[in-house]
Image (cartoon, rainbow, N blue to C red; front, side, top):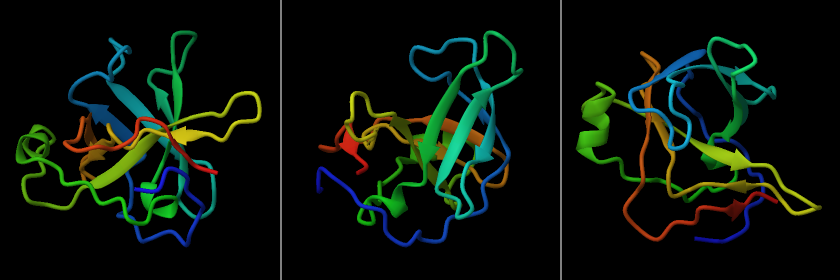
Length: 140
């Protein structure tokens, strides 16, 4: 997989829910299971993931639909991961967490551990994929 990515035409993404419930907390963020998902652009690529309730303890992460930056990214989601969010063989959506760039460097995406979600219910989980995928794939 190419280490750097350029934006391409976004591939159709299933409609994403406005609220997510993580069946397991994100690593390093215990106590945060419910999040709002807000689009930050007009084409459905960049989103803000904010913990609920929004207060002084809330957190915000940026996530993207990976197809716009990594058109060949098509992770295989294990059946136990699908079962954990109640989707079975149904359609899932994938988002990847973005780390903002620092000191002029490009932002990066975590392709190894995407968020997998059921677009119908908002049930989600972060999973570590099998394979040699980067934790910090440049977006620019």
